[in-house]
Amino acid sequence: NGHHPTWGSETANTRGTFVAKMIARYNLFLENRGSKPTFVNTRGHNSIIDLTITNNLAHTMITAWSVANNSPSDHRMITCKADVGNTTKIKQRNIANTDWGLYCEEVGKLYNENRNKCTNYQDINRKATFINSIMNDAMDKACPMVEIKHKTRVAWSEKLIKLQKIKKKAKTEAIRSKCEDKRRAHLEAEKNY
Image 1 (cartoon, rainbow, N blue to C red):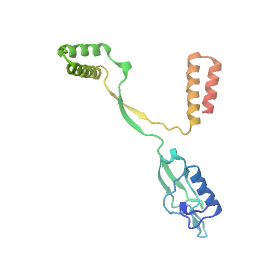
Image 2: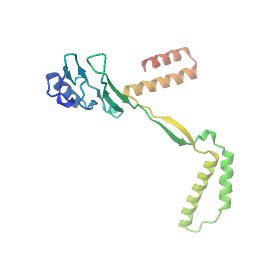
Image 3: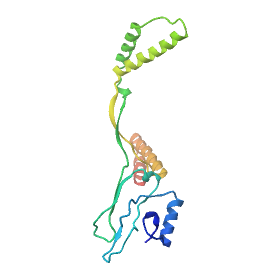
Image 4: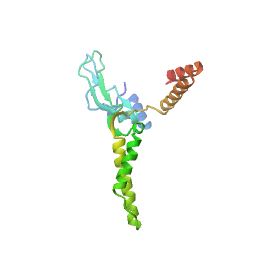
């Protein structure tokens, strides 16, 4: 039961000082908000001894931290929300669905409608800008932008990132080879992840 002014206790004890130093030493974050007691017993004693400690990545995700008014225990229930990813709508082209015949037709038509000779450096720059706009306009018709939902994912550690890559590689190899050894390797990688 560590007490320390950092999280709202009136005094500090040895345990609280140790925890406060650990938070500072390892660049951790204390998510507790306010001065509401996290421990309330039937004898009327209350204190803030239950802590929510996070690393830098998790700290950016924690919102709405609070202590419940009632709890079946002496220790009040702490709740918070962790925003682990945002769903955003982005627009992109699916190049695989491009109508290349339409693209070539549009480029040719637009170029032929506006053909003229270049006589100096400025003409060349104007022509390059013009050709770029022709190609963009043709691409807009042949391969329009489509809205997709994109879920940003959060990797919790370098180890998980590595295990995820191993798992994906093992899955690809298992699918391609249809070999029992590769399938077992995939299952093992899946388990490790």
